[in-house]
Length: 383
Image (cartoon, rainbow, N blue to C red):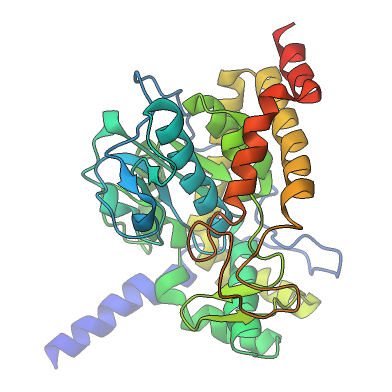
């Protein structure tokens, strides 16, 4: 009986009180055109940092590995390490991670076409990398606006995969049922050095600094091109390394059930927004909003450190190359799902639904050095 009472006391102190730990902000009643998230009216004044350029003599390659081990558990002390955050562009970013590992191996270390630098890009909590060798590994991730991420997860898993009809009641149930996973999600998944208690709101500022200091770079999904350009500049990569094709072009591949699923549109109703504009969701996302704001500010500081004109030119080159890579490669690439949503036996992906069209992207990337229009973009930066 004493143990049960202790359990209920702990729940009341750490869970129930977390929802009403402070006086909530007063938000206006949203309309159909109101922003999805109401939590960014005040300027961010908390901790942030400019991520430094990689200052080692060579790319953090780690031991060379065969392509067949990509996407599987590999040593996590060295190499190019990506933390996949749920519903934050992680499949596309995993493909970019895989291509960078292969490109660097072949370009810098004379590896063959089926060998890669050590890369990690599976969904895992970042504490797995607590013992990484800082001089031989590069740890990075990308975060998404928290409310947008929750809606994306709801429509992905509940609506598209399970066929649930979207409604306010279903979304509310989804939030409450997933508290153990999604309450202050970023603190739980991105923390490298220690296990953080997401209900200790009074320690959020301390948690935040510890989290950011554990990374070489954190990007922003809503600033996708900027984030890729900054990553490229921090590591001294080439534009071709950052190219990608969306694997959701013809539908969503469910690798666990080995089927293709039609992606349902994310339609957020006014009633759903009213629920988001509430103390419950405010408390639920407070930690994530703090991390997101800090990552946004850190991206700004990193751009200022690199030089905004330099970053803008890198973004311009990337967008130019990405558009033409899509024009060249999408039509001839075999994705896991066909144009009519059928699962295909053979694909042009590196593995599963990751790095689809990689051979076409590699060929196109190698041709960039001979493209006069692309060369002019480089020359204009040097002037």
